[in-house]
Image (cartoon, rainbow, N blue to C red; front, side, top):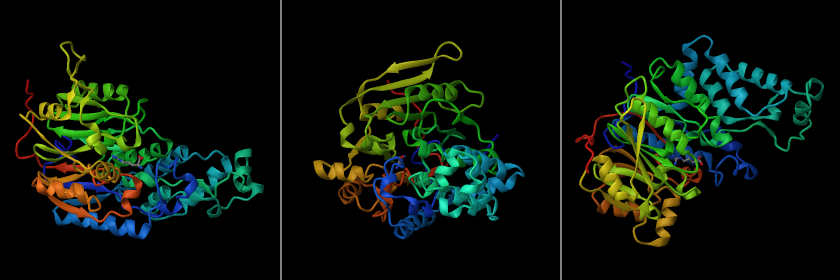
Length: 425
Ligand SMILES: NC(=[NH2+])NCCC[C@H](N)C(=O)O
């Protein structure tokens, strides 16, 4: 049996996590590209790195092994003789480069980098025209000429991949397998290449069962996937995740070849707007029976429960329109859960702090969570509710619109003290 990954809750003691430390890709952001690259501002890189290092150190101090995405990808590329070349070609296919000569020149640039981790980081950083040996005499097409003459309107020939520090999104560990997600935006689809190669070739993590693959046509993003218990997950039907993708993921989890252990999938319909970008911006679990939530989600929700139907291969869908606390209690097999409102009852603090990921927390154990320090109102309330907080400095990291949960992909968690598997009602 495959034994590299194991996540069966959001709160069991965290043993291993994958992060990515923001790098030079943030220096290739410019005011004109912020929109398509899904950033709201340009972070000050040095400070963002200091904050990220503090985040990683807090995790290590909690006994968590911290892995870095670019290091894992480099190890994977070094593990198989043809992997590096195949990776470069796949990355070039996704790069948006059109000219043949430009593509050749970028490939030469990549081939000139000996160290594999430096190659991976270069692919994340983006490529500027002035780094290439590409004069108009070598141009092989109109697309090349536009680049060499500086007519393309940007000094970059390949865009950076700035959202890669949100390691939650491009693939998701569910049980012992992964969902390799199919991202909605062009900029984030390019992140998929890194996870894909890592999960194919890495000596330890390659070969995990795949519950979804990025070649499937429907969009799904990891921020919408919450592993609520050993046999139950929640998925947001959101701007980024389509109901058709949830159908396919659920079918595979419930009926697929390798046994996933998943018996129920709860699909939560959430508004299609930036402050509700993913399910994990709306709520995250902080204790066995407690969640921090965006107050905008209180009220009746449209939720669907997917489970195995009577006939082989069929999926039963039950519509459960109810409030979040009732649905989560049902999903976890508890009599009740506590919902702790981001920003409490203050309408301004609640939207301000939710915008800065006040309800996006990462549990290292039941009742012990990492939060952004800047969300002081929410943090006070969490502390009063008995939650132990580890506060991450967050002036710069938060500008990418993601918090501790988005910035981490759990690889291994111990089972929580009480496995939550029973359906009530
Ligand atoms: N799991 C999350 N909530 N991730 C946040 C991702 C933020 C990123 N700027 C985006 O728009 O895609």
